[in-house]
Figure (cartoon, rainbow, N blue to C red):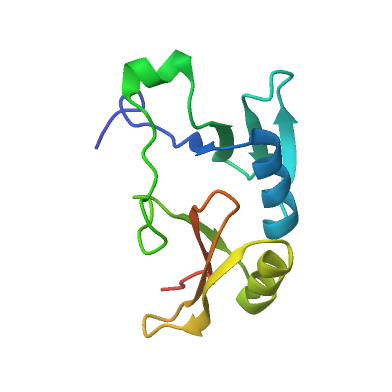
Length: 138
């Protein structure tokens, strides 16, 4: 087993977005999170999401583009990015309705899966795929 020094704790999921403040406000309304902070430069925002923070930062930053490369977006509506954000809800139908009523783009209405989870999909205001699902109990 890995020691504590080399076993990481997932701290942040960073979403590269067009408008940091708009994206943070969207997640607060659509998915019922509180905005923990938006920095004065509007280049960083965080949601109060528990042990792992969801953060937003601009798609293009001279500070990181040269180091890690530019963010690549899907080229058509039939493509999606390589990561989806998944939220657990007790009432997936209500969560899906709330998200869509607050601007999320419907992708797939909630349906019961054969592995015991109810799952629905939306896209956020930046086109990121968000899965709304029930917790899978083993």
